[in-house]
Length: 117
Length: 111
Image 1: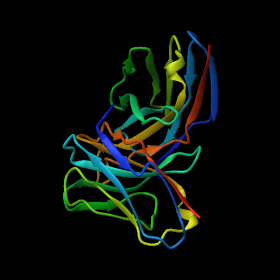
Image 2 (image 1 turned 135 degrees about the horizontal axis):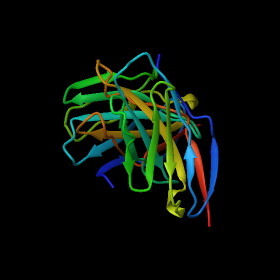
Image 3 (image 1 turned 30 degrees about the vertical axis):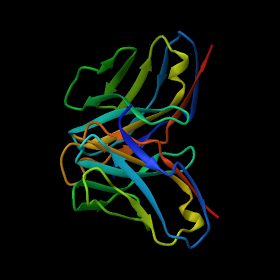
Image 4 (image 1 turned 90 degrees about the vertical axis):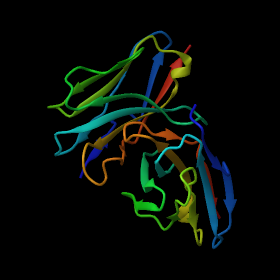
């Protein structure tokens, strides 16, 4: 069974600094997608970034980038120039590429990120 | 933010009551999902639908049921609520498997 592990329940970063959130996953599949979702307090969850496992190049979206290490099954999120609005729960998620449950996301337990002014 | 709505946002109800959590989206998405999220915990998929009249159970066993009679509407029903059903329920929808738009959630408390 696939599992997603986020080993940091809480993280803190100073405004304008860089922070890295960790995620590891377990799967026997070779093709899959990985995601980072952001859930701000009392607001809707939104997609931050996604990575296709067959792509070696790490995905980047503005201040957000990932470090995808397929062999190590590691998928960390780096937030550069942290802003107060980045404070949220961050969830790492996984889905398989094919099969009847291909649309189903498997989530980690989340990392609560605080941003200090 | 995406146009996906959930009502009610908060619900406190007694044991044994029947409840329906509403979820609607105005984007014409075929795919819709229901997740259960306990405080400080991960989301677990409990139901999904890939189109009208199509529903499937997710990875987490749930006593709830769903229906998909219209594309835009995906309600979740509990026939007899119990304290163990206390949780947050998140609805999501999407065109593709690679992006799900989430609703604001319903916080359910069963006394």
